[in-house]
Length: 113
Ligand SMILES: [Zn+2]
Image 1 (cartoon, protein in one colour):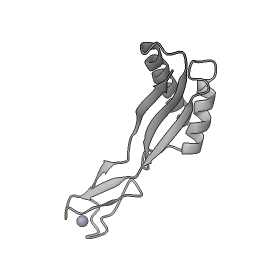
Image 2 (cartoon, protein in one colour):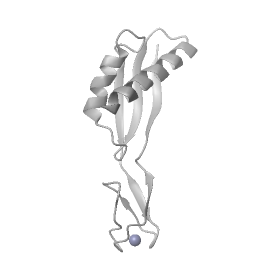
Image 3 (cartoon, helix red, strand yellow):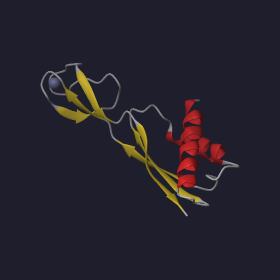
């Protein structure tokens, strides 16, 4: 379950940010998760709660924003929404598709007190 290791690094990062800002409490951690990032949202949310325990991150809300995956066909230049890693161009059936967004997880903001 790699969601746990992701949750742990998120908590670690958030805790370090809070320390930098000399905050006493973290209210919310906002992250962006691409549809092709291979992360189970429910699982990540659950793991975050566990990982946050006994750290300054405890009680913080994890706000998850889904980022739809987008791709570009390298043969015909078409742009489209991608639903799987090995996508096919809907216009010319080519498999030479570059994934432009939706593969990553990143922190958008950390809200502290
Ligand atoms: Zn194409």
